[in-house]
Image (cartoon, rainbow, N blue to C red; front, side, top):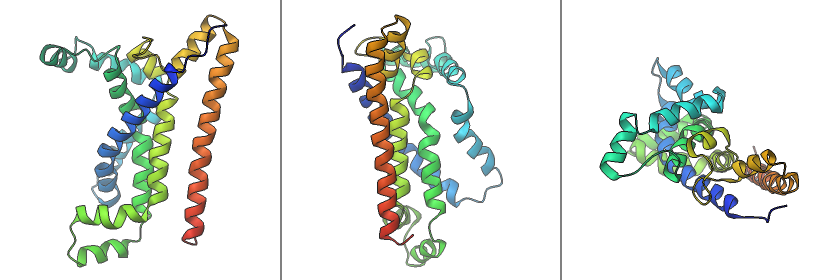
Length: 226
């Protein structure tokens, strides 16, 4: 039995933290726009933002791998301009994780915005506040449960990634070998004892994260009498 190595867990948390921050900045304006627009092609945009939920990770991982490889325009540009390869390194993992976890940030935020009292938003506009001011000073403070849910679920989902991470990043210790990949490799070499330990840690962390979300949402519901 090999020794317990916490590096894959730390790498998973680092990846999840960076991905969650990037996705929050990207998804916030998109989810706000989706909640407010009446554009006739809105369903197409919503379908595109949710595509990663229904696509098999192998399919998504394959296309991301192709898009980031040195043979693609994007991969070639980064390699020639910055001397940076986008596959089989941590940067590639972040990009892949952003695609894979994107719907888990957008959908809770959009639902939160859509649940807001429209009269409250209209009152903000009548008071002379811009859409940006209304977003930050009126909408976000009144949808804390949805906001916290989006952040925590995105973080937890990214920590649990496997298929996309393995295809785009491989298994490079200290660079791309996250906890899910480490468990897969242990099973491959039939080191079931360590696989049990790593899996138990992941189960415990996932349970704590979900429990925290439900407790917070319940407390908010009681606070506002929902």
